[in-house]
Image (cartoon, rainbow, N blue to C red; front, side):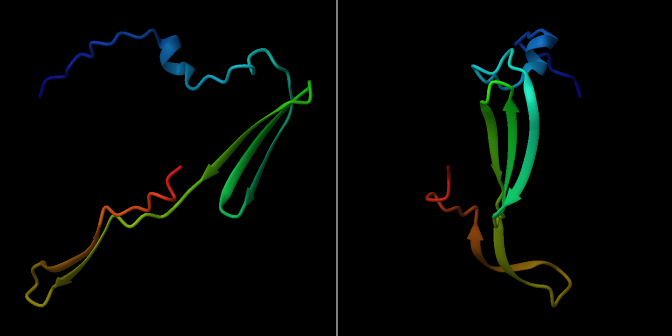
Amino acid sequence: MTKRKSRVKLPPRDIMRGKQYPGVRGKVVDWVDHAFEDGVLYLHVRFTDKTELCWRIGTSLVIKEADLSDWKTGNFNQLAIFAEREFDPDREQ
């Protein structure tokens, strides 16, 4: 197997940079706090100028696939598929 070379050349500085938040650069952090409420993780970064950056991180369980199978013979025999890559578009944010 040969390794492919990427056509995109980025300096290490740009690879490690990650997501940028305009208006936050240069601010002095006063304190950092976290809380977990109703299945959501809140990360608060408070600055000395009384502004705050907050991340709300939610998780969910998703059924990738549900099926009925027969194992009587020792071999997997799929009888029915009940759910396959289903999602609720109203919950997508």
